[in-house]
Length: 181
Image (cartoon, rainbow, N blue to C red; front, side, top):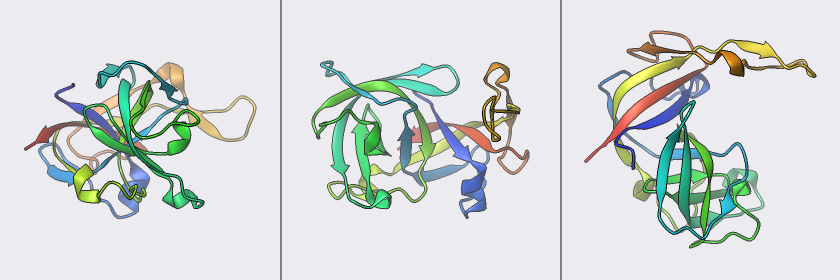
Protein backbone atom coordinates (compact mmCIF):
# COMPACT_ATOMS: atom_id res chain seq x y z
CA UNK A 1 0.00 0.00 0.00
CA UNK A 2 1.16 3.54 -0.64
CA UNK A 3 2.72 5.32 2.33
CA UNK A 4 1.21 8.57 1.06
CA UNK A 5 -2.25 8.98 -0.46
CA UNK A 6 -3.44 11.70 -2.84
CA UNK A 7 -6.91 13.10 -2.12
CA UNK A 8 -8.86 15.55 -4.27
CA UNK A 9 -10.29 18.45 -2.28
CA UNK A 10 -12.71 20.67 -4.21
CA UNK A 11 -13.05 24.42 -3.69
CA UNK A 12 -16.86 24.03 -3.45
CA UNK A 13 -16.33 21.93 -0.30
CA UNK A 14 -14.38 24.78 1.29
CA UNK A 15 -17.08 27.23 0.20
CA UNK A 16 -19.61 24.85 1.75
CA UNK A 17 -17.96 25.20 5.16
CA UNK A 18 -15.09 22.72 5.28
CA UNK A 19 -11.76 24.24 6.36
CA UNK A 20 -8.88 25.34 4.20
CA UNK A 21 -5.98 22.89 4.61
CA UNK A 22 -2.27 23.70 4.99
CA UNK A 23 0.90 21.64 4.81
CA UNK A 24 1.49 20.19 8.29
CA UNK A 25 -2.21 20.04 9.23
CA UNK A 26 -3.51 16.94 10.98
CA UNK A 27 -7.16 16.01 10.77
CA UNK A 28 -9.51 13.01 10.99
CA UNK A 29 -11.72 12.35 7.98
CA UNK A 30 -13.45 9.73 5.85
CA UNK A 31 -12.37 9.18 2.27
CA UNK A 32 -14.65 8.83 -0.73
CA UNK A 33 -13.90 7.13 -4.05
CA UNK A 34 -15.05 7.96 -7.56
CA UNK A 35 -14.69 5.67 -10.55
CA UNK A 36 -14.74 7.16 -14.08
CA UNK A 37 -15.80 3.72 -15.39
CA UNK A 38 -17.73 0.91 -13.75
CA UNK A 39 -15.52 -1.35 -11.62
CA UNK A 40 -15.37 -5.00 -12.71
CA UNK A 41 -15.65 -8.20 -10.69
CA UNK A 42 -12.33 -10.04 -10.24
CA UNK A 43 -11.20 -13.42 -8.93
CA UNK A 44 -8.10 -11.81 -7.42
CA UNK A 45 -8.35 -11.76 -3.62
CA UNK A 46 -5.36 -9.58 -2.69
CA UNK A 47 -6.32 -6.01 -1.77
CA UNK A 48 -4.07 -3.44 -3.42
CA UNK A 49 -3.81 0.10 -4.71
CA UNK A 50 -1.22 1.23 -7.25
CA UNK A 51 -0.79 4.90 -8.16
CA UNK A 52 -1.75 5.89 -11.71
CA UNK A 53 -1.11 9.17 -13.59
CA UNK A 54 -3.11 12.25 -12.64
CA UNK A 55 -3.59 11.15 -9.01
CA UNK A 56 -5.68 8.07 -9.67
CA UNK A 57 -5.28 4.55 -8.31
CA UNK A 58 -5.67 1.11 -9.88
CA UNK A 59 -7.29 -0.96 -7.11
CA UNK A 60 -8.34 -4.48 -6.23
CA UNK A 61 -10.89 -4.09 -3.45
CA UNK A 62 -13.31 -6.11 -1.37
CA UNK A 63 -16.89 -4.86 -1.31
CA UNK A 64 -17.56 -4.42 2.42
CA UNK A 65 -21.11 -3.09 2.58
CA UNK A 66 -23.87 -1.61 0.46
CA UNK A 67 -26.95 0.54 0.97
CA UNK A 68 -29.19 0.73 -2.09
CA UNK A 69 -32.03 2.92 -0.90
CA UNK A 70 -34.67 4.41 -3.18
CA UNK A 71 -33.25 7.81 -2.24
CA UNK A 72 -30.12 8.85 -4.19
CA UNK A 73 -28.88 10.65 -1.05
CA UNK A 74 -28.94 7.39 0.93
CA UNK A 75 -27.20 5.15 -1.60
CA UNK A 76 -23.64 4.17 -0.73
CA UNK A 77 -21.13 1.36 -0.65
CA UNK A 78 -17.84 0.77 1.13
CA UNK A 79 -14.90 -0.92 -0.59
CA UNK A 80 -11.60 -1.89 1.04
CA UNK A 81 -8.27 -2.01 -0.81
CA UNK A 82 -6.22 -1.52 2.35
CA UNK A 83 -8.11 1.71 2.96
CA UNK A 84 -11.89 1.62 3.51
CA UNK A 85 -13.59 4.22 1.30
CA UNK A 86 -17.19 5.27 0.64
CA UNK A 87 -18.67 5.61 -2.84
CA UNK A 88 -21.63 5.29 -5.16
CA UNK A 89 -22.85 1.68 -5.57
CA UNK A 90 -23.76 2.39 -9.21
CA UNK A 91 -20.07 1.96 -10.16
CA UNK A 92 -20.12 -1.67 -8.94
CA UNK A 93 -20.97 -4.54 -11.29
CA UNK A 94 -24.61 -5.63 -11.42
CA UNK A 95 -25.40 -8.18 -8.72
CA UNK A 96 -22.34 -7.29 -6.66
CA UNK A 97 -22.61 -8.02 -2.94
CA UNK A 98 -20.48 -7.75 0.21
CA UNK A 99 -17.53 -10.15 0.03
CA UNK A 100 -17.11 -9.82 -3.75
CA UNK A 101 -13.89 -8.35 -5.11
CA UNK A 102 -13.75 -5.64 -7.76
CA UNK A 103 -10.99 -3.89 -9.65
CA UNK A 104 -10.57 -0.72 -11.67
CA UNK A 105 -9.43 2.87 -11.62
CA UNK A 106 -10.55 5.27 -8.85
CA UNK A 107 -9.82 8.74 -7.58
CA UNK A 108 -9.98 9.53 -3.87
CA UNK A 109 -11.48 12.58 -2.22
CA UNK A 110 -12.34 13.86 1.24
CA UNK A 111 -16.00 13.04 1.91
CA UNK A 112 -18.67 15.64 2.31
CA UNK A 113 -22.23 14.61 3.03
CA UNK A 114 -22.08 11.04 1.73
CA UNK A 115 -24.38 8.41 3.24
CA UNK A 116 -22.80 5.62 5.30
CA UNK A 117 -24.18 2.09 4.82
CA UNK A 118 -25.89 0.85 8.01
CA UNK A 119 -23.33 -1.97 8.47
CA UNK A 120 -20.58 0.63 8.95
CA UNK A 121 -20.23 3.49 11.37
CA UNK A 122 -18.92 6.92 10.55
CA UNK A 123 -16.20 6.50 13.19
CA UNK A 124 -15.08 3.09 11.87
CA UNK A 125 -14.25 4.65 8.49
CA UNK A 126 -12.58 7.81 9.79
CA UNK A 127 -8.76 7.91 9.61
CA UNK A 128 -6.26 10.46 10.93
CA UNK A 129 -4.21 12.23 8.27
CA UNK A 130 -1.14 14.47 8.09
CA UNK A 131 -0.88 16.84 5.10
CA UNK A 132 2.61 16.42 3.58
CA UNK A 133 2.09 18.59 0.49
CA UNK A 134 -0.67 20.35 -1.48
CA UNK A 135 -1.01 20.94 -5.19
CA UNK A 136 -3.46 23.36 -6.77
CA UNK A 137 -5.02 22.02 -9.94
CA UNK A 138 -4.27 24.72 -12.51
CA UNK A 139 -5.25 22.96 -15.75
CA UNK A 140 -7.05 25.41 -18.03
CA UNK A 141 -10.62 24.66 -19.04
CA UNK A 142 -11.56 24.34 -22.69
CA UNK A 143 -14.99 24.42 -24.28
CA UNK A 144 -16.44 21.01 -25.06
CA UNK A 145 -16.44 20.57 -28.86
CA UNK A 146 -20.14 19.63 -29.02
CA UNK A 147 -21.66 21.47 -26.05
CA UNK A 148 -21.63 24.88 -24.38
CA UNK A 149 -19.97 23.78 -21.14
CA UNK A 150 -16.29 23.83 -20.29
CA UNK A 151 -14.17 20.84 -19.34
CA UNK A 152 -10.62 20.21 -18.21
CA UNK A 153 -8.07 20.57 -21.01
CA UNK A 154 -6.60 17.06 -20.76
CA UNK A 155 -3.57 17.69 -22.94
CA UNK A 156 -2.35 20.54 -20.71
CA UNK A 157 -2.69 19.10 -17.19
CA UNK A 158 -0.91 21.38 -14.74
CA UNK A 159 -0.48 21.46 -10.95
CA UNK A 160 1.19 24.09 -8.78
CA UNK A 161 2.70 23.26 -5.38
CA UNK A 162 1.20 25.50 -2.66
CA UNK A 163 1.41 25.72 1.15
CA UNK A 164 -2.32 26.10 1.71
CA UNK A 165 -5.62 25.81 -0.12
CA UNK A 166 -6.13 29.46 0.88
CA UNK A 167 -2.92 30.62 -0.85
CA UNK A 168 -4.02 30.05 -4.47
CA UNK A 169 -7.55 29.97 -5.85
CA UNK A 170 -8.21 26.76 -7.72
CA UNK A 171 -11.30 24.66 -8.38
CA UNK A 172 -9.52 21.58 -6.99
CA UNK A 173 -6.54 20.71 -4.84
CA UNK A 174 -4.62 17.50 -4.28
CA UNK A 175 -3.78 16.83 -0.63
CA UNK A 176 -0.82 14.44 -0.30
CA UNK A 177 -1.40 12.79 3.08
CA UNK A 178 0.07 10.10 5.29
CA UNK A 179 -2.01 8.26 7.84
CA UNK A 180 -1.10 9.00 11.46
CA UNK A 181 -1.71 6.66 14.35
